Amino acid sequence: MEEQDIMKILLIGSGGREHALAWKMTQSPLCDELIVAPGNAGIAQIARCIKIAVEDSQAITDLAVSEKIDFCIVGPETPLVLGLADQLRTHNIPVFGPSMKAAQLEGSKGFMKDLCRKYNIPTAAYERFTDKDSANKFIDRLGAPIVIKADGLAAGKGVIVAQTIEQAKEAVADMLSGNAFGHAGSSIVIEEFLDGEEISYFAICDGENLLPLASAQDHKRVGDGDTGPNTGGMGAYSPARLITPAMEQEILEKILTPTVSAMKSEGCPFTGVFFAGIMVVNGKPILMEYNVRFGDPECQTLMMRLKSDLVDMLYAAATGKLQTIHPEWSDNPSLCVVMAAKGYPATYIKNTPIKNLDAAGAAKNVEIFHAGTAQKDGQTISIGGRVLGITATGQDVATARTNAYAAVDLIDWPEGFCRRDIAWRALSSSAAE
Picture 1 (spheres, rainbow, N blue to C red):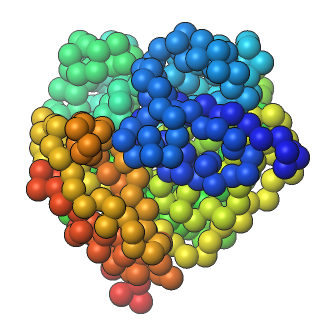
Picture 2 (tube, rainbow, N blue to C red):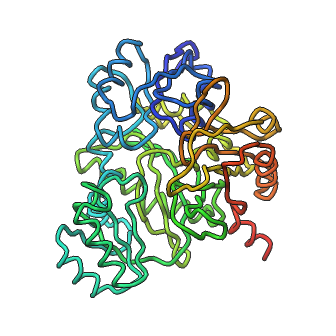
């Protein structure tokens, strides 16, 4: 792409992931103007925000056409699963994000597992069920612990790791009755429990070519030491401690490259980002799940480390020219601490003021990415569960963590909380060496 080909860009989403993408995109000489729908209070400081729900594909398409958008990036999974990318492409607008059919990789856990089985991609043993009796027989055969997953999208919550056979059967009854996750749980996947350590690996694809990005490790549970209920993610760091050149090679050769070929063979070539949830069991990577968007809070850590032009990279993926891109990454690790509203992931307090953000974000090597925020009467207020992602870099993980928590401690928000041990695995392993 020539330098003069500057673009009017539309980004869909309102979370910390989208703020990090917007922050990086506005640094690109290719970005003439950035519009974000719906955005948040942090994004509004660097882009024009237009209040449209991410699920409203028609309103988003109308906006893209009326604003003469040159390029659209879809942040969250729901609009992709609903077919937003297809709708935009009918108007000849290049889109970074998979088609509705390809988005099934995340939209249907059954589709993803069946693809792995058919194309010999390493994943946990599983079966799919729509009736309780067959599911219960399979549970009796496999034993516990065992993993029960709603087939459809359940806002990151459709996975139960049952420690006993009784818990597993309860989860099955709850999902198939529609009580737990509505329509998303009308079909379920039951799979063996893998005992290992999870890492996130990212690569982008233009339908044909695969470009490896980087790894991160998320912290799903709400409390220090990985205790308490699962959340959308309480923090992350990049690169993940277990990733080595050999492990990366194995992920690319045995998981990601075969997936690119498989999706082409199935008639739904994949354009967008592969976010592979990998379980490392006895040093071997096994695919747990695919997401078809950047992770949140992993995206925040990746954007802090990326030295190359993000717009150039994503546009090349959207237009089938990924082989021309060679991204550069900082060797310095990055770390993101999520500040959430007290009570999250259950019922949480909303509409509370957050102060001193400017001072907290002024530190060198620190960026504060907004998620569940809005502006009201000149103040930043919390409107979501996960509210801020305080992200920092450093010469090593320990320094990145010190920098991030120093910024956290400057934020005046009594109704917020965070985990104090992000990257504990990486730091306890390096202390042990």
